[in-house]
Image (cartoon, rainbow, N blue to C red; front, side):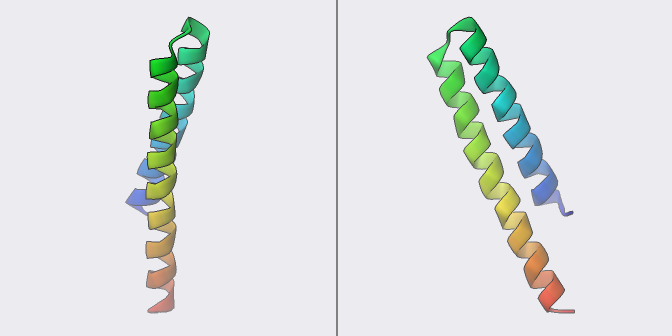
Length: 59
């Protein structure tokens, strides 16, 4: 795993937690922020996957 994969996964998990906290306290703003973090994390994780694939192809 590279840094992008790790950081992306962490953002995704953090976003899921934030979304659930938002649901628990009735804050649609926190839910939206959590969903946004999840998307950002998934994109970063996929960028890391792509970088890994490119690096493996160059070996």
